[in-house]
Amino acid sequence: MSNTADPADGPARRTAWIAGAIVLLGLLIRLLVAPSYGYLGMDADLIEQKQAVHRAITIGVHQVYTPNRVNDPALAGGEWQGGYFVNYPPLIVYLRLPPVLIYRQLAPAAFDLWDSELNYFELLHTDLDYRLAHSRGFTVALKLPGILADALIALGLFLVLSGPRGSPAGLLAAAFYAWNPGIIFNTAHWGQSDAVWVALLALSLYSMHRGWIEVGWVAYALSALTKPQAGAFLLLVLFLGLTRAPLRRVAVAAAAAVATALLVFLPFLLHGTFVQSVEAIFGSVFGGEPFVSCNANNLWWVLTGGRGYEVSDATAVLGPLTPRLFGMLAFLAGNGLVFWRLRRPGGDVSRVFLAAGFLWMVFFTFNTELHENHMMAALPLLAFAVTRDQRLWGLLGVLSVTFLLNLVLFDHAALAPVMRALGVESLDVRLLSVAAASLNVAAFGALAWIFWQRTEPD
Image (cartoon, rainbow, N blue to C red; front, side, top):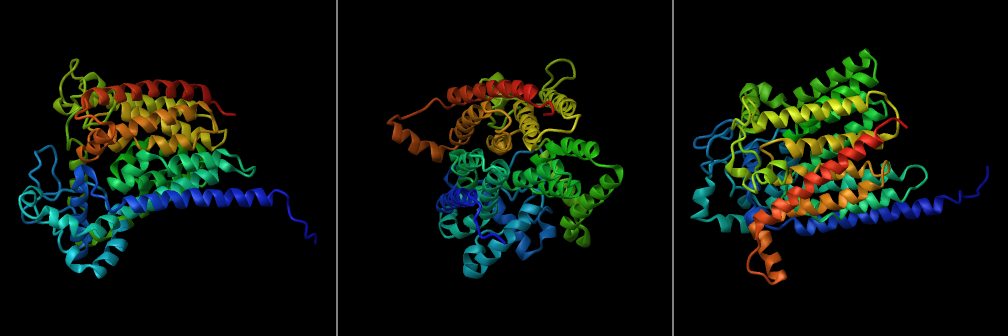
């Protein structure tokens, strides 16, 4: 047996070490940012998440979506009264339980500051500042699943894009994601869990491209049970499975996905709160905030001149056509176009990710009731596709800027230090956000052209 080392081993090892350093530095940056006070400088959405996890640990996870004595977490279309409100599916609650349980052992008094019967508006006039200051570890614990998911996405980008030849695209994509200011802001500062469902979706798409349909559908089920936005990919996931596997394996994959969903909801089934909990999730997601744009810098933000929160998405525009219906029809048309272009299997995995990134931008551009952070999924999905067309790097640069603007412009606590650094007393947020939304719409147009050109099988 020869002891001669492969000449390629040295560069491959160096590349792997560099990738590890990129991912670890991104992780370290996020951990340093994690104790921050998040959206509006008061943790905002994370307050309800703290209450949800507190409720799951002290009362039972099966009670997360049921009304308590004073608050109804299934708020749908009504005006928020400051009470406990949560509309995420249960998987993200499960993922947050381990770090929060450790935190509870270390600081039980701080953990008990976030009972689910507390009212946000009442806390504003009493001791909200005290509770926030004395429970920073609780906030970090809630952010940890998203932070770790970010690291996994960056690592996945390196592994998928580097390939056996060690393409530099893998390092570039990993650095792009790991050090992306908007992604860091969204995950480590705001504490959003988008990275978790996107990581599971990426695993699903990659698995199905490799022919592992059972793994792909189980991963997708977990993604959809983490955050509702993953539901936008249901038709794509079904299409990929039905067109790339024999019927017998499709049946096995479907059974595995259903079994996974039942396992996630097992505590609710055992305690008789399953139906009520599912109704609460659906009721608060669909029509929960019936506006054409909830600060999302998309087409509706442009058309309303930055007043998306002032226009109902149920307003009749042309006969029975409402903005909500128009968005749904546009998204269905986008799905149809994707199916047509992917009708013949072939090409590398970048083709599938380009289609997914395009589909998400269709969803973000045309659908209503979307928020600032909902564009996030486009960045990792398109990063997985950069080897298909180098022009995607330019689009990723534009979308990274507009994504960061979409977050910072609507967070007064984050905008204030920016204005001080610029030496200005005020910024025209509406004008800047409309400009960012216009760039997003233009970027969508460019992406649509690239998608059409580059999705034929190799």
